[in-house]
Amino acid sequence: MARYTDADCKLCRREGCKLFLKGERCLTKKCSFERRPNVPGVHGAARKKITEYGTQLREKQKVKRAYGLQEKQFRKYYDMANNMKGIVGENMLVLLERRLDNVVYRMGIGASRDESRQIVNHGHITVNGKTVNIPSYLVSVDDVIAVKENKREKEMFKSLKDVKVVYPKWLEFDNTKLTGKINALPQRDDIDLNIQEHLIVELYSK
Image (tube, rainbow, N blue to C red; front, side, top):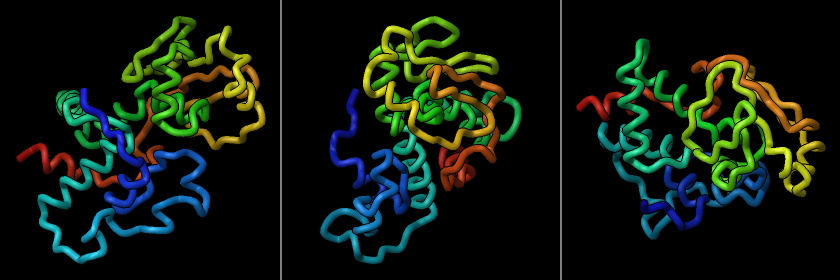
């Protein structure tokens, strides 16, 4: 499967907002979006009229890139959301938030979703006591997420004890025991990215 291998910061500049793809760097003065907010490329600073389709496409690309998904994967979540009861756009975002790599990121185990995906891929995470190395695994209410016991002495996990993170209200995490729990399914208000999901629904509905 093809995967983006260029500089992550270019994606934030292309979408015109911070996607927090580089962890703590995004909160410092080193953030490329802060220093060069224009679109990357020779003609990036030029003003261009954006069509309705272009606006919808950019919104879709923004969400895809924030969660680190390819088109086929992203479309799968839209189709799943479309077959659920409720508002399609909100259902889609809730499904994305329930991905295990995103949960690991929200718990502060990984500094970014990309790093969290790698942590899951390498088998460092357990769900209800069983090792799960599938980043797209969808967590459910009352699931217990933890760093695998024989991995807890790794420096990257030991350092979490000194890290202070603001957790979403739908989950909890004990950074001394390196164990967390899903208290409820995420709601639309819990998603902090500036997303206009109705534009994505309009795009896929054409």
